[in-house]
Amino acid sequence: MEVQVIPLEKIALRAREAAELLSVSERTLWKWAKQGRIPCVKTSKERTATVLYPVEALKKFMRDMASNPENTGGVQG
Image (cartoon, rainbow, N blue to C red; front, side, top):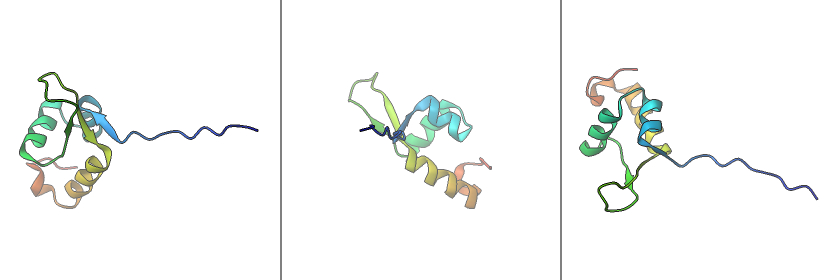
């Protein structure tokens, strides 16, 4: 019996990956998260906690940005 390997898709990205996906700097990504434009999840309450950005939220943000660039702080695709 052969075991089938199913590749897992990432459900969240680290800041560098998310910023690269959106073609913005990590600083811009952090600013948008702080403003509530993009949701993020901190892995702990520590100052050095990893911040993750849900892939579905990033996809939604890109769709919204493409359909209404005025709401993205001047960023246009």
